[in-house]
Image (cartoon, rainbow, N blue to C red; front, side):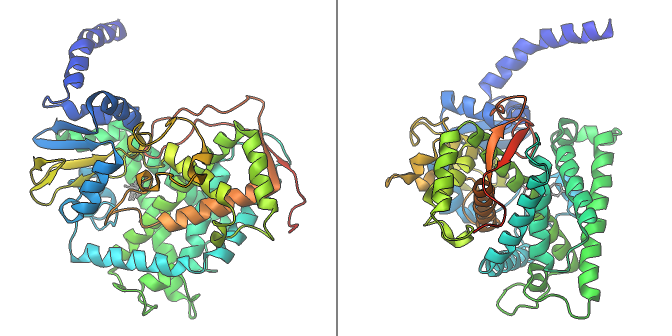
Length: 470
Ligand code: 3QZ
């Protein structure tokens, strides 16, 4: 009875709500941002109404940008104007009051944290080859252990992207595999709860904060687990009489004179590690999952990639992008169609500015729709098709490919992620033929969440070359 009444109420409310959403300019136009299909829904809207959507959220303007040109105008040309992040109740709760690189607003401490994190990652980037190769071999070993039986690869990918970050940060002083596996699962749950609509709503509707919220309680419990793990790793390093040299953690602690900004304050250091772990785990694993899913649909492309890999002496390394153009194109095409963070992170105007000739007031929120920009029919032919070949032709629109955002707040892990995807995917394709599992080909539609992931699927990984052969 109650359910029927609720349904009736919903049906009655639906048409006016839909009309409100269609107009978008109303006081709650930004409810579009809560749509479960997020970026996809906003892309459809942009196709009808153009690349600059203007909405209202409470008392603020929200701009959703859906073309690479206008995103670059804001975040590259006017980058100083858009350095801020919108204030966030939840963000503040999970970052010790805004000490986070991804979520924090510009202040001297944040600039120092950004300089140190970018500097440490750039240093590490010069010697990624051996690390990625080792991790990639362990990844393939684990995949091999399934002996060609149907397997959902996502958790395996997540563990190995998480281990990559751990190795980069801690060198050989990594936590035991069991502990790391538990932590990578904790991060997955953390992101899942972070994206839950009952939790998201706390940012948009302040009165809800007075009510008990089970999602929020779970979020805080997971944040505690996250913090205990990160704290234990830092302590282990500081107590070690001769900690491994040349690690990202060492650089953040000020042990590498070439890295500016270090040492960081304890809280900034802690949150920089959290960002690296969260930013580098599920995002990269999701992209690997998408690449595999797309390639299951294109066996002939797999064969061409294998032939390209066979032409190389030895295993693929991060420096082989020029020698493996099709593999490089496959990574780019995966990131074009399925950017792991399809709406990036929201920006906030620090001062009055302009965009597309329109005046913009300070405090305006900007949401870059990377998914829409990367499927813009003005730029991309057959925008929705998976065609890595498009990147092999001379005039390919590279500048319109923005999976990591652009400008001063673009993803600091871009080079790492690209190298990791390139090497891991190369090692996998070199050793295994990817074949659909008993349920058939995976779906390629997007499912809602903080990170754009493909629907769960199983595949068979059939060895097509003895392991370890050159
Ligand atoms: C998908 C907010 C935004 O772009 O405990 O992976 C800590 C800080 C909750 C980092 C969300 C940075 C979750 C996903 C890059 C992406 C928590 C953080 C932040 C987490 C990530 C968040 C983000 C990222």
